[in-house]
Length: 154
Image (cartoon, rainbow, N blue to C red; front, side, top):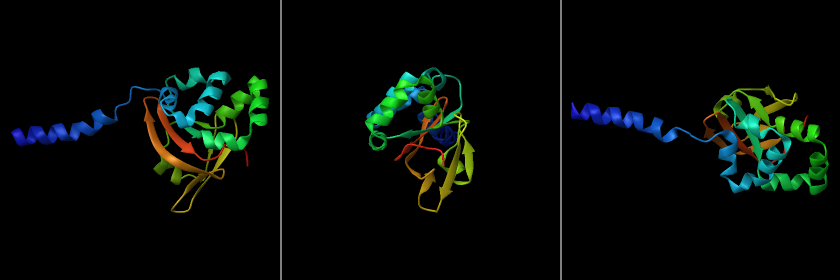
């Protein structure tokens, strides 16, 4: 009986450990390597959505990826609320897709209206040419995947 209880406890433990209290936005805010994109999320008005029910999948560029975009382009985006919002939404999918699920896809529509093209060659998973550098960061309303480039329409 005691052995059965120990096994039952151990089987429940991973579920307790994986339970997330943070939303996608809160989880992204915990990682300093996403701070530039998180700032744009706040400015775009998409923050409320990412704190909402979901589920969502967010492909979030690292600060290094954002630096590749250039300050001039970022400033232009910030000057147009609609363009900035669309830019953010083109990194967001409706529904939760783990890296394993994404590997099986050819494409996926974003909430910004563009289509992401997916390529998995057995080693690297790429979305519109951006490599997923960290996958399956779980939140209570979805999942985050870090990418090494900003997503642009193909």
